[in-house]
Amino acid sequence: MAFTLMPLPYDAEALAPAITAETFGYHHGKHHQAYVDKTNAAIEGTANADASLEAIIAASRGSDAGLFNNSAQTWNHGFYWHSLAPATSGPSGDLADKIDASFGSLDALKEELKSKGAGHFASGWVWLAEKGGKLEVVDTHDADTLADSSDYNPLLVIDLWEHAYYLDHQNARPGYLSAVVDGHLNWDFAADNLARGSTWTYPA
Ligand code: MN
Image (tube, rainbow, N blue to C red):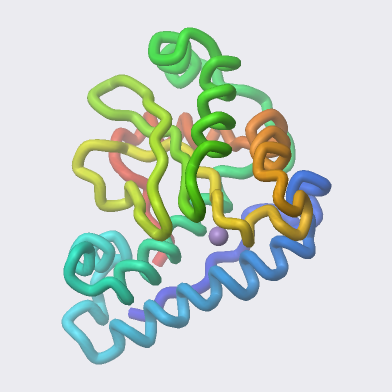
């Protein structure tokens, strides 16, 4: 089964100026496409040819760096597109309760996402994730992912690679993080992931 580049769940202009259509053009149209293509090329004719993306990530972790990096990046980018939204309404219900219980307040969670994201060295991802009923902000390096984690259920992710923000914010990663965290996180997606209680799956 070949994987496909999932369409963006909003118009490419919808998050400007935080993330412009030019960035989405390269990030979605070139970077994500390349991860999908390289994953498909690596699994063709192998035992992984009909496996789910999540199973491929788990099977290649620690044993096949090329396949792991491309399959994990395919998954991470799909999860990232869904973690963003043109407008944000803020968390409610069980998600809001767990944010207050875990961080003290929504503002404290936002500050932790910004500070951990800004402090992360080089490329990677910053996540909001649930573990044992509590929410945590965690970061992963390069292509590393929570997609196959047995501990964490990822709720949201923000891409920290320079290709995510350089065209719009140049070297100012904190400016990108503030624009995304304050204005463009998809709290409905986070609430869906929390309510499901199991990890989101990449569309087949
Ligand atoms: Mn990226």
